[in-house]
Length: 512
Image 1 (tube, rainbow, N blue to C red):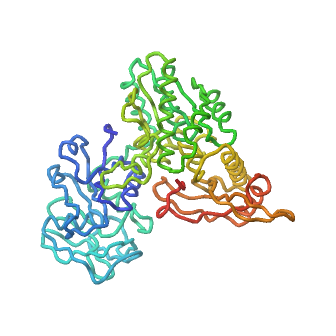
Image 2: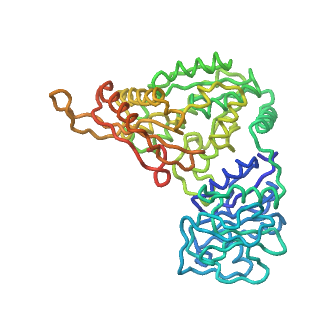
Image 3: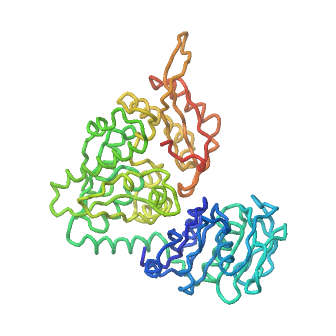
């Protein structure tokens, strides 16, 4: 958001780049990830208060290594290099970087030698998270050593005549004990940032921007029933009220009883002008025999837009399409040039090139937990704000392989039982996201005295803060047992249940 002070994070391909952005946001300063080779004009237009150089998998001496963007030095603002970012920064100013005989990975101790600024109020002996095989072998007296590792390797540094800092460890990772405090020192003591990024300020500025952009025209808002689109809808409703027309599309891939629940909550609870369009037959016919997950997403994305365009013909002066796109959606869809496309999101990679609407995405800069905070600030009910995330393509990306009405029925019933079990046993609010996946495999079982050959259901539950990384939830055995028994006994066509214990990375949260 251009109206907030911002810190730019240059992406050099680190698995932790998104974590850096999130930690800065948690300190109430707006952060934004950008390509490491951003042009000077774009850089100046963003008017950053400071720049952070992320880590990365390369070595500065590799022939194809990312080089430092020399435009950053024209801005005369503080710079913090993390891991590869530190090596890149020092290498630019003549330091020698070499592969080390001693690799530093995981928990390490560092000794802080200078605690005036970056390490103000930080313990002199500290535990940090390292992940590097290269080291700063030598450097001249323009650089000062702020900290060394237990192996006597340079762990933190400062350029003597500028506010250029480097840390060889990762302060953004929770395993660095005082990592947040170190980042706070860089933001507030070095960069003089103000902690103004919060949900109330975001809402005020977002409403102002929406009003300016929409003017006297009307907005078509796509509502899926999930947290993102619901909060987006509440924000648009607050900004332009009767100028907004909300469209809830039943694509036939919703959770059990989702349509009446969503319609009641939004229409009656939030007084939205919302219409439900049952397009399930169109969606299911288009998805028939489709097994590739990327194609599923793109088909659904296009059909959503087609549905909105058709509905908009009855809405006079409708020029805008509003969507609940989030920052992780943009990143995972290849939003940074240094990032790979993990998966297309229907509201990012699935949109057609020629769109007959102007796109409004008021939540595009937010992480999931920030969206929930905005929802609470807008007075939305807990039922909507605290719901587990649900993908735009719905159950299409939780049914592995072909999509049929029978497979949808099986998954809807199993998922409903699983979620209700988590609620009954007070586990739902401990989990970031939980759901069932229908696997295209049948297994042999025994029910009563007879042989069965039926479907396999996988249970998934993860913990996370923002969806960018996630850990599998250590589900109590009695909860798993009850969920499994209920599903097998009540869902016709299922005879086996398994539990997914894959974290993100290496997996994704959703299976497709």
